[in-house]
Image 1: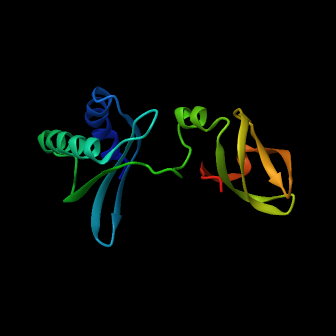
Image 2: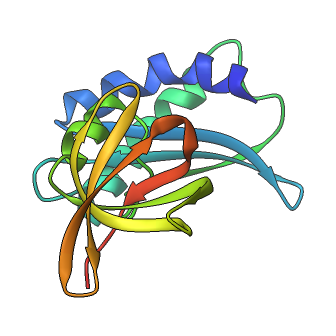
Length: 158
């Protein structure tokens, strides 16, 4: 499945870049017997709108149909969408955007009796992240080794 992504990404990314948008992620998956090519795009600073997604979808679809030889082994459904407000943090650009913003982390093992934290990302490096978390009425700093992070995503603070 990742072979398809490797063949398709160089075709799709320039189209997205030319529109001033950003390729956030791509996945080629099989669900309930149907293949899906999902392309997640965004635009800084205020996000992408449905009209831009529709325009990109048309352009990308035309370009994918023109690839010879066809990289898709079976019929597929193309889906272009925004990654959403609570998207995973994957790329270096995501990490930079997450800095000083509210995030959610799930851990492989507990730290201070909890496996889930939400807070403001204060700093990060290859080894660890530093979160400012709420503990009742106070704010505390929590250092989390990156190797313990099972998942990490943007979050909405309530």
